[in-house]
Image (tube, rainbow over all chains, first blue to last red; front, side):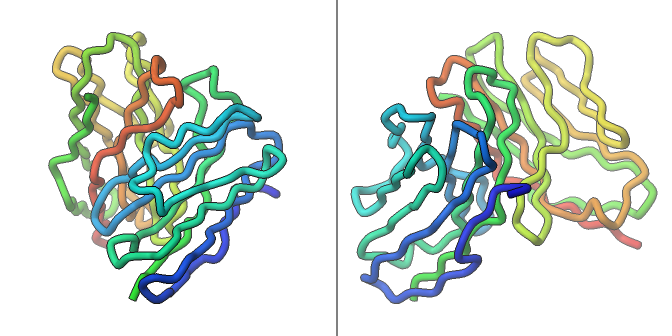
Length: 116
Length: 116
């Protein structure tokens, strides 16, 4: 595809339910990031994938959050037993080569999660 | 820890005039990268401009330029000849090339309003 895509665009769920958010990075991009953007805030790093290496999960806020990346491409962020404080926009980004720190991260349009 | 501060939650400017958005950061590193991203209502983050700390010259991209003051740890964005399409949230971000995951550290953002 031409850019990073994310689905669904919006998700409304009830407290305690599990949700899955999907990210399709730009083809050929080896690095993939998940960020969380709460209302009126900047982005908070959640997790980072680089190729086939073990992901950097240092930003995940609790063990209810997990993510995987299949075949070095599509990624899924899963939130179990959702809480109201999980309500936010979840953004995915990909970049071509992480060994060049100036490389641009390309962002998807995000998934707006609302937990009732 | 590295931090990024945007002290202006909201700015407004008349169409065709010039506006400057402020950003300060805190780091003990000498080499790093700074970015300005634009987030329109579509939520998709778009890179506006980037600056490498070891470069003395301020980056410029058409109507967008930065005033990078390394000693003061200041990285402001100037938008000249403001257009209605410039209305968006603007985020300042920092990257430390020594971070193993190259994550971006974000400010809280400035909402830019363009008055016709």
